[in-house]
Image (cartoon, rainbow, N blue to C red; front, top):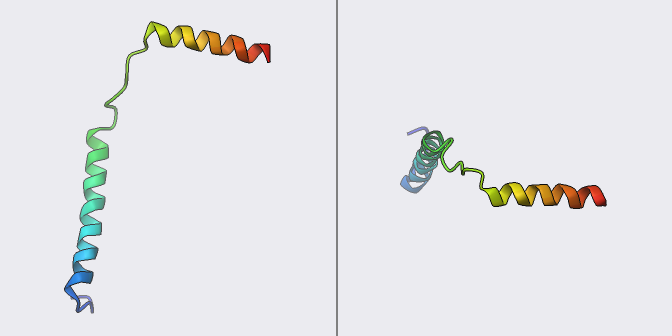
Length: 56
């Protein structure tokens, strides 16, 4: 098969292709998951951070 006589090399090629496909599918399924809501503490922290940076 394609000049590759060793079954281990064929298995490595197939596993690389399979893992690539699996990673692409996983990425597409979980594309926008995990987006967290903005907490009031986050807004307060951001305002304080801007204030500190402006003082520098």
